[in-house]
Amino acid sequence: VYSSTYELPWGKGRRWLTTGPAAMTLGGWSLGAILTLQAGSPDGLVTQVNTTNAFNGVQRVNLLRNPTLPKSERTLQRWFDTSAAVAPPAFSFGTAGRANLISPGLATLDLSIMKNHRFLERYNIQVRLEAFNSLNRVNLEDPGRALGAPTFGVITVARSARTLQAGLKFTF
Image 1 (cartoon, helix red, strand yellow):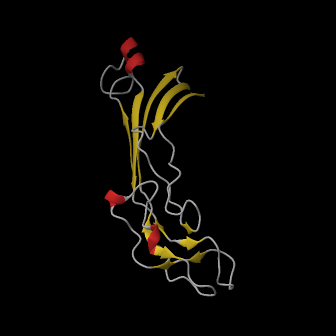
Image 2: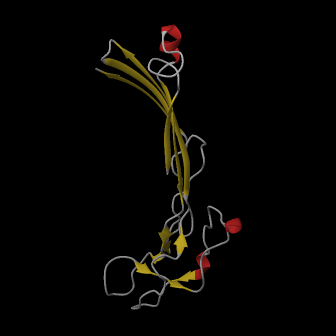
Image 3: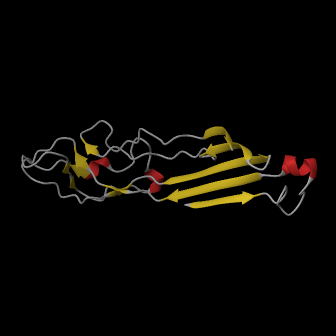
């Protein structure tokens, strides 16, 4: 995650345009950005029904081969090789490890522009505009991991698209 704020260099108390109407109009502006780049998290494949008769909860699958597909073959309907996983026999544990796959990553750029207008020494009005996921990149959620479920290997949800927000704050 990279985060930054840049205060523009003009207006009262800045380098340029320190007095007059231009200082009041052009002063007090700030630009902000937050860049988030995350690799996907490790995920494991499980069965929809626990057949061990030993505990409650999810059970790992048996893997026949590595279920990871090359990036060029991944689609929303087939994020990993679903034929690489089978249910373990009754009364036995699955052979798969805890983390067989890497889920989709995350890449977002959030931007903001803000204006602070100070008056009478102790009052401030702040106007801000913010754009979350400003590039409107599709960031996918995890695929279905439960063998036997209709969503096994399928990505059905994406994170939020671009969101715009405006705010007004008065401090005294």
